[in-house]
Amino acid sequence: MTQPQHVGVIGLGAMGAGIARTLRHRGFHVHVCDVKPGAAEAFAKEGGSAWANPAEVAAAAPVVVSVVVNAAQTEGVLFGDHGAAAAMKPGSTFIMCSTVDPNWSIALEGKLAAQGVHYIDGPISGGAAKAASGQMTMMTSAKPEAYAAANHVLDAMAGKVYRLGDAAGAGSKVKIINQLLAGVHIAVAAEAMALGLREGVDAAALYEVITNSAGNSWMFENRMAHVIAGDYTPLSAVDIFVKDLGLVLDTARASKFPLPLAATAHQMFMQASTAGFAREDDSAVIKIFPGIELPKAKGAA
Image (cartoon, rainbow, N blue to C red):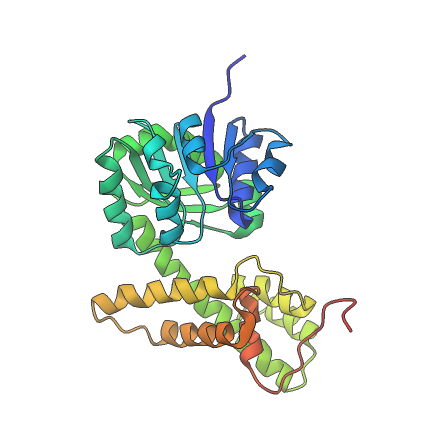
């Protein structure tokens, strides 16, 4: 019987946990760690190995997948106390799945190459459900030798793996453009639903009509369902789009490229964050609109 291949997953949030389970279901021995106490151990009870820190994961697996929030957390995963970089053997591969500044990703590729470690710029999209079912999308760019070392992992963890270039940067650029659209779509979906509520339209009826009409978008259909349910449990939080749309605007600012809709959406998420909704689901951006009565969660007073 063929022995399972080993892969590491660092970060067991909504997306990372789904990725780890997908890889396990597809025959890999998955090594995990997470800053949240008990998260890695809970995963390991169903199969796989829990480790205390990124260095231990990297020592156990030739391919390490990092699924943390941002560049700062990725730096910590690699170069912080008990970081993965020092434990990664030459020829091993680090797959970076966060939404980051493309220039930062390019620099990281060079830093890891200096110690003989392959790097894949590999942001992800699709949400927790698609991560868990192995159907998420990856926007990747990497040197050919990095793909050669880790193609089997990429193809196992995602339904669509786009290979966008032969060096880091292109994957993160495409992800930033995706986030421009995602953030604007959520913001305008909230605006539309808020107007409907202000005008006295039944929220469920409005949702039914729009999701079967030309005004629909994936984000309206997905996020306004959270509003209808009155459930703002964060799958992707308001502050994620404060960060991501900030990256969009930083990228455009460097070349003096105007992004009026992205700028407005960013301000909306900033307003929601400042108003106390930073850690709620990003659909909570609807709470910035005055004079509307939002649906309540079932059982809420």
